[in-house]
Image: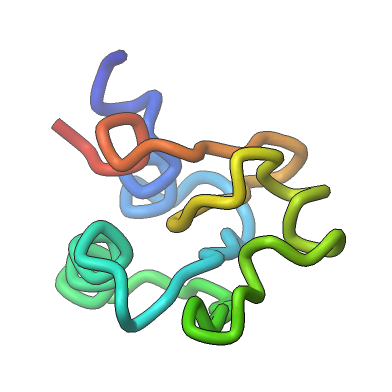
Length: 89
């Protein structure tokens, strides 16, 4: 995937709308995505999940990511569920 294919890279270049990050403070992968978003000063709607309360296994989140894993980055109608594809390279 090219750098411009990443939602983070597209928004940093001035393209794309609001992105939504489904994350948990207990997730190291979520933290890496939040750090990059903060470093690039990008607008992002945050949806925090409490993994200790198994919120990632509730039907509302399973509709977002059937594997029940965080982070998930939503960009328009697209959802990226793996850090490798979320972060710019």
